Image 1 (cartoon, rainbow, N blue to C red):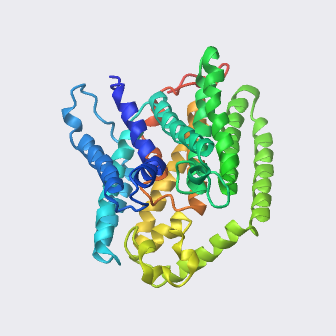
Image 2: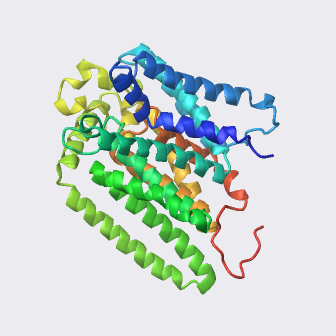
Image 3: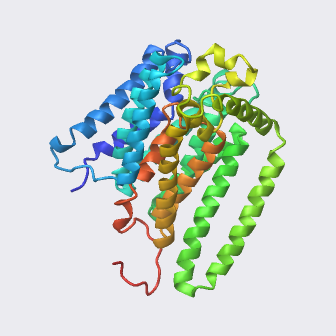
Length: 414
């Protein structure tokens, strides 16, 4: 039974909220209430999203259309539940218990929302995520065009409706991946129009000046194309294609390491390495259970040691989780990310298609971005999409994918 057309639209709205930029723009620029997670408007928006997601899941059996949420991957579900419970429990030893408790409850809602996202058919998912990111990028380009004080940061890099360039660039990267996917599947008469999405998103990424986002996008999209393309060509032309694929993979890896070597000495990585070192010094003081979730960066006692600690995050999700939740919280986090990578890579290898390329490129991009940014924080679309990729491991690839690459004389699926 097909979903109501309203659900993809509501998912798109939820994902737009979780890009954070439009919410903070309204709170800061329209309502003049500043940039704070605890500001009443900002808090209310995220709490409303979390409550709506939990209510949707809780009332799943009472839906009028009779369409139930499909059972998710059990390991992923267990890991997400364990992580969510531990996030809430961390308020018991948090440096600021009230802040941790309030934010942690939103994370329960994000887990429920991830299940709703995972349940979407691929065409609906692509429309929802493409719409959310395209609107965010479009509003950002409008902000850049209309006002330097709003659209540009102090270094004249583009930030649009976001608080900084490192928030705009990853959203633009997701829009490029989904825009390419949508263009590949669009009818000929609409293809040029749809291709405008990755085009103007690319302009936004260039304007943002984010090197890490560009590197993540090129590596993710290139590796996903290599996996899908090698597998599809090998079925048509024989196993000799695998050697060419391995060769291209090696060249790509060397190119990636070369780019990292060039970028490693730039200011952005020098500062990150300093932050990572400072965060690690704090982690070793509480390695088992951490300092409590999503609270240390507003605590003067924690940030007073170095000015870079006032930047608001550990600039890496692994360190962020370890800092806030200890090794106990890090384990389920790594399980979730590992399942997302495994399921999308396996699907792309077994069933090369536009759909499997899209999911693999998207997950790779999100994971690479999490190496240099703490997207597990900030009630982020990034974390929701990674959870969704892990949750859909069991059921997503049993259906014929949308936009499958034609393979001559392919045996029927079992």
